[in-house]
Image (tube, rainbow, N blue to C red; front, side):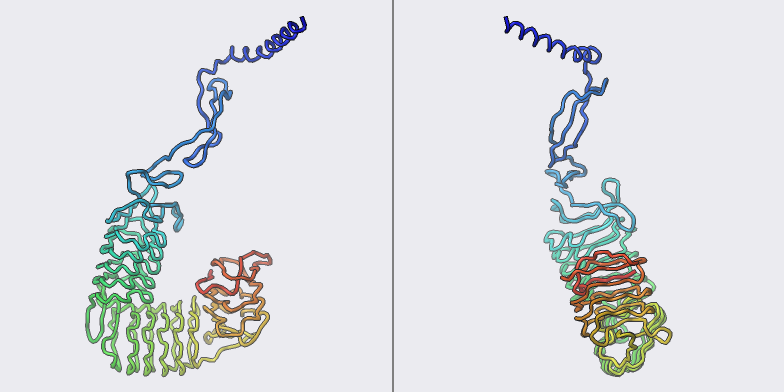
Length: 500
């Protein structure tokens, strides 16, 4: 009897519970449902989804699920794995000069020997080739760059030993090639510089032993240090004891080298714009030189070891004095750099022992390490700091310290802290440095050797772009009375460059 009562009670309870459900089902049969993602799945992460009634919105069923790769233009949208049976380069999304697009970062699964870099991918421009993207590739025979490529990164094609041809879209937007981009491409035969590219960087074609034809244009302004080292196959135009590379309208654009080292005087052609690396190096009988208007750059070692050089006339168009450009010119006594000179290279006037008068341009932006080492120049000192400049501003460039200091305040009129400014000085005890409000450049390795440095204080924050800081000692960078952690410092790594 008791068991019958329990069974009846349980039935009654179930009946009561089913009433709402039956009432609900009577209103909506959930006949039309659709999947809705709660957590979307990818090819590597399981998702969670639910069946939801389209009529009443009630969730009817829930489950975990997985998906395989989803390909677009041959690459998985989620993990980047190339589609089986197709060959595709590897990309990543970037923003370059405010424009969104893609950068090629590697060969992916492509085995193409004739490489085509596209202009467009997924409706966006392909803007860049990443640093070392094709480093050491042994199969690429040629590469053609699409119109939208603006940058080729450092060592991007370095060591591509069988690369013979490099070409660009006729309306190429390339404006930057970074250092050593084609270093060691020993089979490369020709290279035509795109019209938007004005600088050929350091070691760009170093070791390109088969390079015969380098086609320039009139807007090329700079050929970096060792950019053409080992390119002995280049065919130069020889005229009046010198070798030239030209462009349309400027057949003497680059004065590459003087073939007669015994010259005492030389007339540089009026259409020359670049004095090449080591062009007059060790012309020990050269006593004077006058460069024509239009010359934009003195490449590294341009006049180094010209031990009889006494008189130099520089054009107002000059922008850069390269590494060791006048190093070892032991009889050079005075020089005025034109107002347009912005960059003075490492050891530019090294061992110019007779040099006692040098007017630096007021708008100079960078000064290389040891640029004025072992010259006859007299430094101006202020509160333990050493400076060089001009008549209007003797504190223009900070070049070191006089003696052991605990703290240093850089003069308010200083514009540039030279690269490696503390090199060869007693900087190990320096604890804090305050940077003047008018400084626009903290040169590479400016504080190397400052082993005790704890604080770097900027008088003004506006516009500073600060590179990666290396070292072991913690440091605070103080700007506008607020502290910002900047990592660690034992000085600044020799390649760091702070500017605004």
